[in-house]
Image 1 (tube, helix red, strand yellow):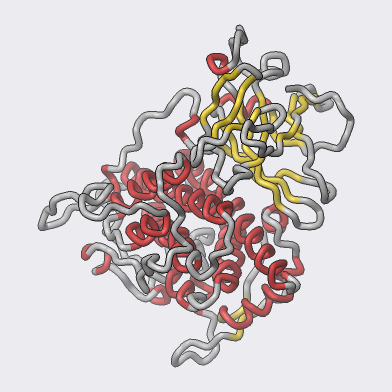
Image 2: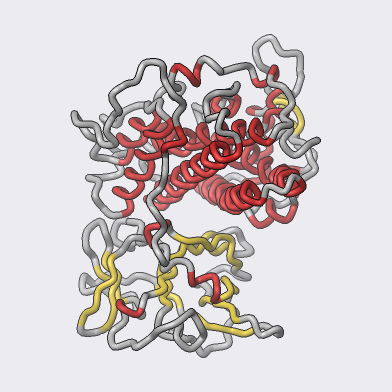
Length: 483
């Protein structure tokens, strides 16, 4: 599907990056701030009729392998990342996992009369001979740029990875308990909101990860009855997700935690933050979905993707902790709930949640992650560096998601996003939003300096005198880049 026109087309990726997986999330943003989510399919030779294709990706054998279409079904907005690919008389079709609507991968036409947007691809060589994929720009908007390009999931890895080992996620309990099943035997969830609340109420971190993976798979493959956010009987999320007794016993005030120096202690602290981040991704779905019945399916697709990312990050960090320091399993060191406490302030408002958690806390992670990675690199810990680099790449997309839905809400409400963001921070943050800032990654995520320069919150906590405790804990990465 090689395009031949000379219209401006955003550059997406070197073709060599397509060798690892067969499906990729692709998000474009225009100069005007509009977002467009796409799915890139790299079909395997077995999926292509009479292809005869073999070998690594090249401009020649990719010619008929690449298809790009909008990420959400035009019927009811289902995530198309797990669409089945089938062959019919007219060519190849993608079949929506929710209601089996089919769309021609080249034209987007469906026998139902609907039409999905499809986008031509082109392979161009740089001056040094490196070949890149370019994709046709969406209609409307100008200067479209790629802001996210990454595999859909390990379900589409090529070759498939070994099963995920979660044995390192639990510390020994003095009173062994019968393990809970991933799917409860009684009253199993049938909607995404029900799964979100179940996961939020799951104290065991290993089971939380397993249930996250299972729930996202059910949602993406159309095996849930509905999202459930428009139901009057939608369950409510907890005020605070529970933790197992051994973890809760180690909960401390973040202001009293010692400066992190040891690599194992740092990994443990980061894993604690990622466990809270899993909860926050589900909480934004469960807490605000029923309050905003007009939220489109793409919102839930984005935040289930984030929940899956955070569970991956948690698993990577705890696995690395287990390898680096076997006597220090996750849960054996002090932890804190500062990120959740910051989220409590935002409970009444989705707009505040997006601003404080995703555009302040997670953006602050973009600032300090490079220093943390450099510290592990200086220690010669290449395995931890790879883990932290993976997390950082994903976190850029999380800030992008926060920016996308914050600006979407602002557009719906007819307010300026920059002024509104700064007002949300003034009301919901304590102290300065401190630099130095990672301007490059913030810009990539949609945050121009107008959002964050000279930004200060004026919120007062009970008994506080104006300190900046909240600002110093940020996403929990503070301190790991120092020393």
